[in-house]
Length: 390
Image (tube, rainbow, N blue to C red; front, top):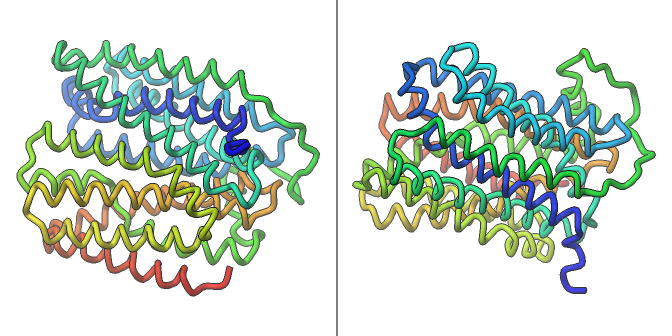
């Protein structure tokens, strides 16, 4: 059959991600507003998000390695989605600082718990010739949730402005639909395990894979991590959109538009990567990124911003899922969760540095320099990946 690679597990895991992203992205635009409404300062919000993202990043590597050494991956997936679903309404239960920190950290810990194991399950459903389209399809469904979620939040707040707590409770519904769907996944029996032991008390044990994994993994992941050090938060693009004359509705609208382009393009670009090769598509995506960032630094027109956000959706579709698919192809099957988890853990740390660096460059020299540096690094990494032997 033409789409035989879209197996039951691929469909179910994709729907699980869609429901989860509806819940998460429904709250993403309003969480800072809610926290400010209950007395959190911008500084505390920043610390909260930094800690939460660090927990998510490091736990991806830890739980990915644990998943590889376990005989089953599905419990990690189910527990991770359940933890994230339960943590969302917790945010609205109390206004205590430590409670908010606990709820937000648990939500991101759930993401770290499930990511490596879920990606390994997806990899098991594909062959090297279909990895791009399988990961691309999953990414497209996931990102579709990032379109539906904010749209639902805008619709609700239009009729009930300022009613943030109820929105957190509503987000619990798609979160639990995601949890329920995980019980439809059918996991295959595994007998292969990575060499060496695993200590649950060594939270950084996953980092040893950087040394133990294939040289091709280090070359690929190393180049992508250099890029990640200069790939800052999308918040800076939204700030630039505002500077270019878009109002609040326009800024939210262009963010939804970007996610829609990303969702629609992810699968066909995954098919293209399987046909032309992961390298060509990913390098092309980096060059599109450079075009977007250079354009953002130079433009002051709203319509140009719209075009650049369209291209930004194409870049995202050509890089994130393709990078995971490529990594899974050059790592051993029994190490898939560790390989992807280690990369995404270091990527999260790099993203924190990138946002700080971009903010500093913007403050000192303006957006042209901040975006220009990121664009130049993207071109450099693209040239490196086009030439390096993998």
